[in-house]
Length: 126
Image (cartoon, rainbow, N blue to C red; front, side, top):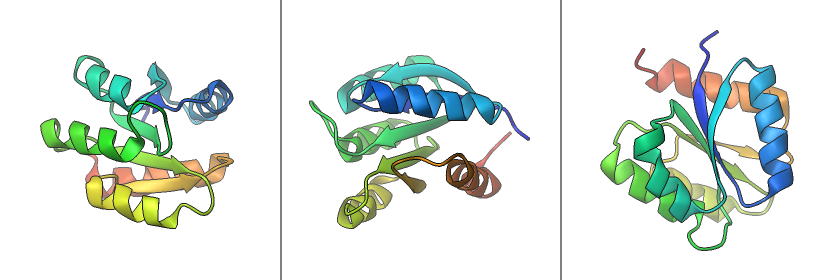
């Protein structure tokens, strides 16, 4: 299994804590946390994570706009959207913005692993 450096982007401290725990259990390292899309876009270049988990609904700048900004400058950025049920159109918008996958909240360890594996199989450049 590939160990990744991951940035977690979410405005919920509980979700950040849960995602961090799951990601660490899966053998990855959370190298940065952002609470808004604007912060994520601003720090991406200096953090240079292997993967980003990106909430869609956040204050300041949503995950869709942040994904557009990140992917505009860093074309090979690997971003997984984290979304609540009932946000199907937002998921479609996020994929069109450059996200490569999504997981539904509450995040399940197995589903997150499947999404990461699918992205790595298709897009990982080691």
